[in-house]
Image (tube, rainbow, N blue to C red; front, side):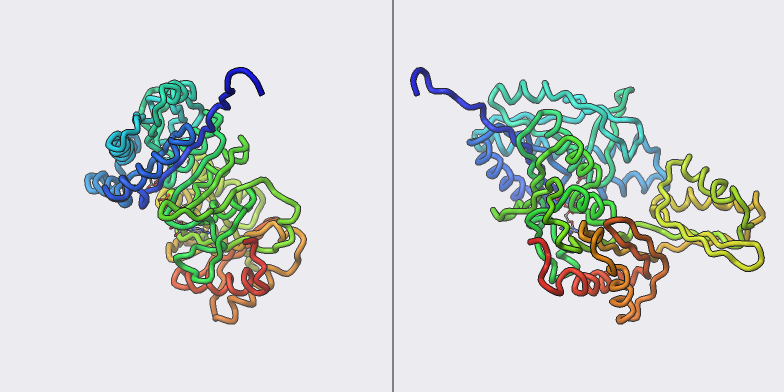
Amino acid sequence: MSGAARHEPRALIVQKYGGTSVGSIERIQEVARRVANAAAESRVIVVVSAMSGETDRLLGLARALSPEPIARETDVVIASGEQVTAALLSIALAERGVAAQSFLGHQIRIRTDSAYGRARIQSIDGERLHRVLDEGKVAVVAGFQGVDAEDSITTLGRGGSDTTAVAIAAAADADACEIYTDVEGVYTADPRVCPGAQKLERISFDEMLELASLGAKVLQIRSVELAKRYGVRVHVRSSFNQCEGTCVVPEETSMEEVTVAGVACDRDQAKIKLSRVPDRPGLAAKLFSPIARAGIVVDMIIQNVGEDGTTDMTFTVPKLEVKRALDLVRATGREVGAGAVESAGDIAKVSIVGLGMRSHAGVAAQIFEALAREGINIQMISTSEIKVSVVIDAKYAELAVRVLHDALVNPAGEARV
Ligand code: ADP
Ligand code: ASP
Ligand code: MG
């Protein structure tokens, strides 16, 4: 070696802190301490959520004025929670002698579509962040928000700060994206529901996508989609200790050896039943096309054929959309001369996910047996390559998670931990 010392560019990491992690002044000070440590080693962009409970409180204010508050204005209200934490963390960092600057979504041009309440990020100005980092500062970004083409504020859906973090990591070409939360990583089931749940060292993008879409709210599904598409290294870990968490990684061959990666539970679906639909071609299209055009995602669908030329259609939609869906179903029902329309919100969808289900037969049968032993009735079933889902009565949701976890994840201690 000769000549001037060569300086490797310092690594760039994105750290995201969720609601509980910034839930009080003391917690914000603790996060500032962690960020300061990281900033001594690396360039750091921090993404923050609102303080825990704040987004619900803000939504409650809007709903106190209107049962269905205007979507655009609701986003302006609920985006404010993240604005507060971003600035508070910057103040706390300054108190520790760490230069930091907060940014709202529009200040780093987080462009989204105009789907208020569930907007999708289209682009981010990574250059703006790099300029701040080059000045030696920590950039603190308000999660969960962006602006549409009209510069109206949008929000990214519940849990959306995860997506802000991964999108920023992709746009700024970060070396890692650390998601700090109130559990130590991704577990084989929600550790708050299932005491036997085990922390996974690694989980594949596809398994994490399924778990996230099936109710494991530890990562927002869109964040996993972006991480997979842009190859972002995501590490989910605790903001309360230093333990290694869970890495979300591309699929590895050995992962198929483990049948079941985890169990997830979704209580946010409702069931709609339309009885006595005339059984003739084109009726499913007539029923579901208006629902699709309204942007409502239909999940499970069951059709039972009767003996008198009619059929019953049962399907699930997000609880938040049930009212709109019911209006559309009633209109179609009248048009085609169908019978009664019923809906039920007291259901839960419990799902088992694992890459190994591709090559291991019989998982569905094991699920049905385990639930039968507890006398839990299955209302609907759906399967895909790496998951099996059942809809059951909501009051058995937690029991079902524990029973299925113990029957399928634990038996030979085979979880991928
Ligand atoms: P944050 O506010 O940090 O974003 P969230 O509440 O959105 O945190 O997500 C973390 C929570 O996700 C945990 O407290 C846990 O109860 C829940 N959770 C559900 N399923 C899982 C799972 N499989 N692994 C880890 N946590 C899970
Ligand atoms: N504050 C938002 C929510 O509660 C976004 C987030 O925390 O990720 O959903
Ligand atoms: Mg979250």
